[in-house]
Length: 158
Image (cartoon, rainbow, N blue to C red; front, side):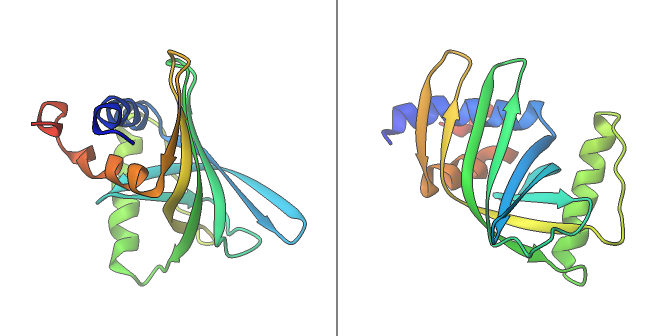
């Protein structure tokens, strides 16, 4: 993707992340499809989803959909996933970040014993913006869009 277009859409992706907390995560195991309403967060350039109950299967692949109805923006992508174990220090860091984010929006967050935390690795995706523009995104586009998430927009392209 040309850098000028990427600069434009990375701001759309960042805005989408700022205005949304929930996502839909779909997985398939044998002939069964599971769709989970999940809380998601980006941390250190990676996506994490919190499934309130363990998925029927250990999700290895899935589709993530993040949508902001107000701005008519949608980001969806195919992903590979890995389960973050409770003993891993990353598990606590991600859950604490999710709790802080949920508190800022005055939503409650429920840590359940049989929950599952997944780290998602984007493979390919699609961004649709409110101006009815549709962009196909590669793995590198999606990963690249995550890294500036902790920076101010003025720092992104200096």
